[in-house]
Figure 1 (cartoon, each protein chain N blue to C red):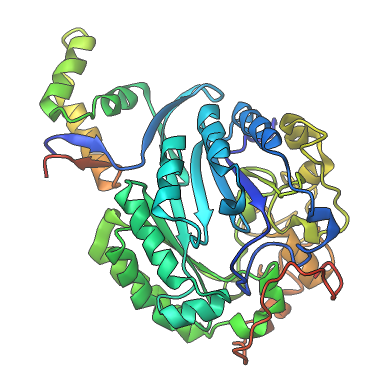
Figure 2: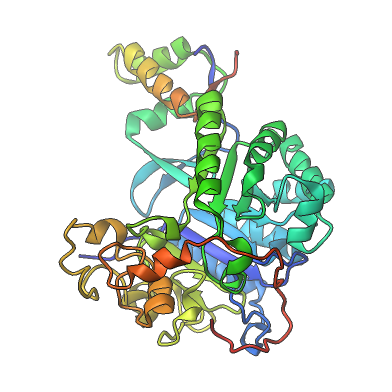
Length: 368
Length: 86
């Protein structure tokens, strides 16, 4: 069976960022030497065209903070020229009306603004940067210019109780989408698990609020609510399955099947400087290794629920981190012999103190 | 629905890699058959009756009014098409 065609290219333009969110999904070793040399604009432009030829439709321009790229307007125009639908995923501290206008002219389709909390002071504390007012101004600028707007807010024990305020703010800002992603434990969130992990009750109240909001607002605002893995007992199809829907390009040109894939030491990642995207998608070991179902072990191999092609075995990074084996069944699964690790991780965190994201060279071992 | 138009930010595109019509929306894509693509292309401020008349002509007199209404209502329910007259 030929491999599926990817739909989404996640272009991490730079790991630099004015914000210091303690759950950032970027690798904890973003300060390492391997990330110092960012791709040239011409690399990205070639990548966008190769991505479209491979089947990609959606381009996420993200980071770190993608607006730190001085050539962002040209990159947006190149994405449009390639026939991709582009989303700017931004912390929005640099998204002024003037810059937004230039991005609109360049052909940007959609803007996604992160907020860390609907409360200004709390937002600034979580982001580690005075940014709330700028974010609100950015969201308004986006709507004034006719961009469809998504607000995204990563949820955790320190902001989950404000979900009604988040919903109100989203409506007031005239956003079309709201992504409420409960923290998943990758990247910096692993370091901060004790400060982030919510109670079951917080999650239940949040879910209830979202349900009422959806009933009231209808299709005018789409709300995505992602329950944290640890509170499930069947795994999610992480990334829609390994190397099935999405390709991630890190700022240094490394191509990854997901943002967290560098935590799997046995994988070697091809670089778009050296290889065309088509080869990477079809031939590179990092992409073929866990694609499909042939690599699966028990209990996945003879899944009692026949979910192999539904959840694709769950998350490889999580399997490695919690069981020591990247080929193991995601321990979120109740059939995994390591499921007790997930059950005990459900316990709510006990501290409000964050270890903030930083690009200083790592002191701790590079991989978590 | 009187004067349907695509919701802000939605873009029609023919995907020459997969050989199908699509409505691209923020972080998603809706696959369209040939007829749906033709209907949505005509959602430029004209009325549903005008759209139906144009298509009926294209299909050599077959009356497609009901199909057009059905499609636009379904797209409206999903928030993909809104009424410019409302």
